[in-house]
Length: 350
Image (tube, rainbow, N blue to C red; front, side):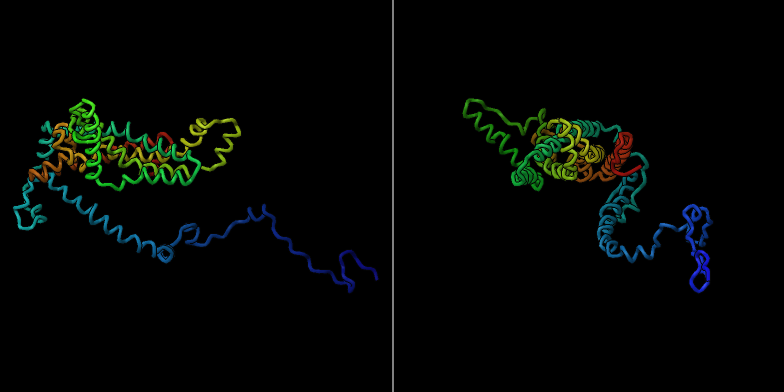
């Protein structure tokens, strides 16, 4: 018995093999869409997300409550800026808001005509520009210097020493500077022993802006060093090795590798600093207010405190604070827009 090609010994043919469709056929075949599934592709239902993240949500609830109570609810008190607020019009200070007469924008008109307000605003802007120019580059330079130290133990000790003043109160900071630069300080006593008398930097109104800038650098530069060192730790060592293989020296590696890695952090901190331009400090200036005079040490924060707490003019102080906050928000938005134009993320994305 002759067998045909592909037949079995018993004369039967095997079943034809089922060929799988090729990729082209599969791509050409129409897909059956299930109603309600295609529109929700990639979107996790709320019930699933709640089961997955409810522990984290519960953990953040106390923080949200604290923010609402201490940061957002007090914003409702800005209504007194449009009133002639008198806390004694009612036995309850909160209820006095509903019994105080409305005066509209009278407090803001008074603020524009007040020369003391413009003097405080001028001092605030001058101090902000000075601190931005002299204070902001210091943490970057110190972070680069510490990062260049090879021994980790020396680096850790230097970082701890520079970060320690950040935990000091302004009372302690002013006291330390008084003991060094004051009329009875170390420098004055040394100069007096050599025939020079009258040195007292703490009461010099002309140099006060440089003095408070030096105090801010000594106290808060360590915090900036921590931020920049964290950014430097994320830089891959392969970039430095590739630059060194291309013949780049230490300065070129810093310019082409290190500084571009720090640029997003620098842009973010600059945006935050510009938004905080009108808040150059309060306690630091209040402690040294009477040593150099009101003309040199009065800033917007101390001006609001003086008018609101000392003089009891709560409505006028609220109006000044409201304008200060509105300008701060505009500065943050403007600085963040500039950061976007320069290709950086800033505080938030576009």
